[in-house]
Image: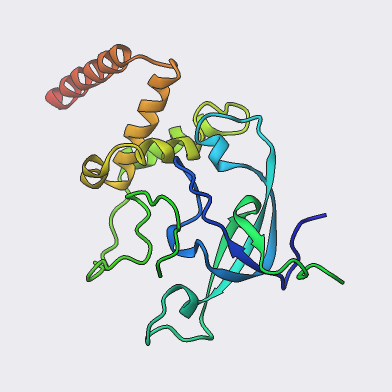
Length: 100
Length: 113
């Protein structure tokens, strides 16, 4: 059972981690929509320091309306950026987003 | 946008102004393919000697000057070498000796042709 489902709104956290992370600065603190589940992978933050026996984490595909990332006149609201984000970097937008 | 997004590495340039992007297809050089081949072998599931994320951590720790001075594959090569030394898989001395003997061999071969 994964924590998020397709259609869930999620916010990308700013975990303040030093070292190698795969979550670019421009998506942190932004709200997007889960559009896919990519499977479970070893955490790249562990792999980056040679830990190959760490806990595997879920990876989601998350879509952001371009203007939420680049608020200007050029980026149209119907254009999306889709990026893969690991579970620990995501929070549900509202506590009820997973309710039936 | 004043909210705190946390630390940002010098390599994390998404969204920065970059000026004109040169639309030139660069050749993929033989030594670059070798770097990728070796990296693939070091990182595969049976060896797990150096992972791609370790290589990334390596060049993300170069400091911005060295990082910007090197090409894509030179970064990977330098970082991969650093990690192999860090893990004691090879020493700088062994590496320097191997490079010296490789150079000497190359000089002999190219001189005889």
